[in-house]
Structure formats: structure tokens, C-alpha cells
Picture 1 (tube, rainbow, N blue to C red):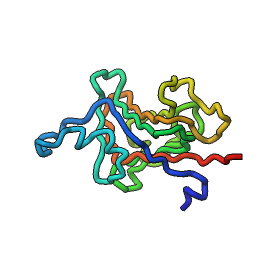
Picture 2: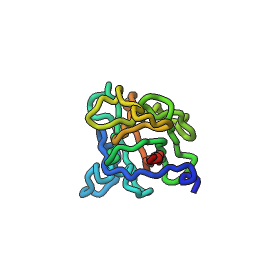
Picture 3: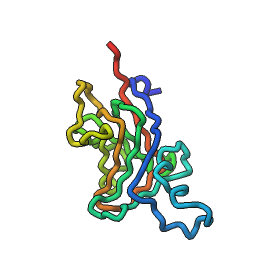
Picture 4: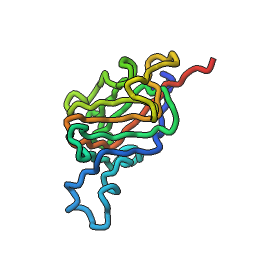
Length: 171
């Protein structure tokens, strides 16, 4: 109810990709389950609190680990929630997307205890560094893609990623 009073709505992402799927726990899985089915990028946006995405670097350690989420349309993204362990709020980070040109930071919650996570909102096909609030919107980042990156190349494990858009007035 509080989110609606602030005129914000949840965005339902359409797809996700990542640098590589964690393979270390395969010996515990039935043989017919492929790694992407167990820990694939889409597990972070599937709405199932029992599943999780586990991302490792994809061979280029300098690029680190990354996960991109397609939102399906251009939104004015106000905040991103990262749920590290099921629905337990003490393991949730909330990143604000209102201060920097393209990055979401100003993290509240569990983020201080984790590895550095860089979150960028941009429009696919455009240079993420040149993107910004060109339409005059304040308090949000405009784009159709959100990228999560850990430059240390460490494992990134997310139970759910939630995205919230600012509802803009149509004057």
C-alpha cells in the first residue's frame, strides 16, 4: 500500500541473461537437470521464492560477473530490490536510482555486508555511459535494461530481483 501512495509500480521483467551459471553443486542434482534450469538467470525474475539464480564470471575475469534483465519497455526506474535469501527482509538490499547519471546506488539494507554490486539502467542498443534523464524526469533512471555487475568476478546469487518504476503524470 505504501508503494502506491508514492505513485510507484512494480515492473514485470521479460527475460534475463548472465555471464555464466554456477556449476559447483551439480553433484547434488538429478542428472537430467541442466545447470541453467537449476540456477539460470531467469530464476532471479521468475517470482518463485524457492528458486535462485547463481552467476559466475564467464571466462573473462576482468569483466567480472554480470546479469542483465530486460524490462520489455522503457521505464523510469526508481528503485531496485535485491533479495539474497528468500523473503527474509534482513537479506534484502534496496538500491535507489535517483542520484547518479545511470547507476543505481544509495543502498539501504543488506548491501553493506556484500561484495560491491554495480547496477546500471540503460536503453538496449545505446551507450550506457551517455544515458541519463534527458526527458526531464527526476528521481529515476530511464531505460529498458538493468545490468548487475560484480567486477571482482565473485559469485552472485539472487533469489529475486524486483524493479519499481515511477508513475509519471501525463499532463
